[in-house]
Length: 413
Image (cartoon, rainbow, N blue to C red):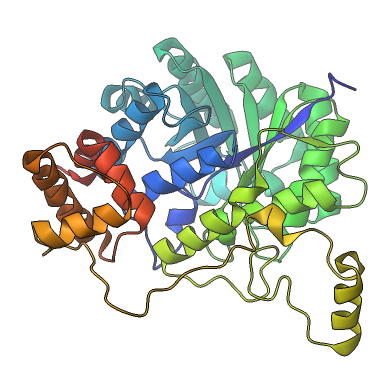
């Protein structure tokens, strides 16, 4: 039992989440999410796009945080196309990158109607295999290979593709339900067959177009474990993501911990700490500017609310009557203090007196006026960068790592 495969979380908020139409995150906000995911015990963060130039300074700054073991043990991983050109560009721009996911389409629909003759089925496999070999040669410690539109890919071809990826040196296959067309029944059958035939760890990447993404993610992970390989579930905080979103981070954890038949046989990475849920979900909501739905599992305003007489009576007698898990487990329950009197804030037009007052309340001290002035200047830039007031943890981060913060705020078009 101790050698049974495990389920790990690879959060893709900073890659797929930020691809949500009409919203975005600043590079500072993405950095804070990486830090919070690390505190939560998430295995890997897909922290951005190595070949996208406006990400370069942010990505290198976060790799520097990883080298300093500030971002540790979480692994920062980048998303690129499965081409040798993208691999070479990634390592040129980010010499310290160690973890990559290489993506290419595999369904007939996309090979025929997206590539439009540029690639056929065999050249897709050839391109992917060469890219994986190039990445390993360049120093990648791990490579996941993404089969985009796997759920609409012919099974015989998907198996051939996965065998080629494994032979080239891939560590995982990312089964992408790109359009969210799978059901828990189909994804279980397909991933189990794929994992048994190829014998490689499976990464499950789902979309919520049918409202099934969490169920599909759990079913896919179950299939991988039943086939004897590790499972990696892709999540996004608050279920953000393209169109109807990706698998909600907290819902996935709760399902694995409390779903019938899961905890006994399907073991989640023991580093995962659900107590960070309340903090990370509130921060992501603020950063994205998207409210948490009132009925969101675990963190919604009504997740532990009771009004009906029978329910209120039962919950007051024993909360197990109407609550599956404890709110304290998600980091909830502490009162939140809101100042209603004078409030000094630090913004893009702050002066040194007001700035010092803000940091004194955070119990952050500066060695001299020069240090304080340098951090003040960074805080001004950070407010312009975020276009909204900084939260306490952002202010503390800037004071703790001013040079890294400077890199995050810097872009060179």
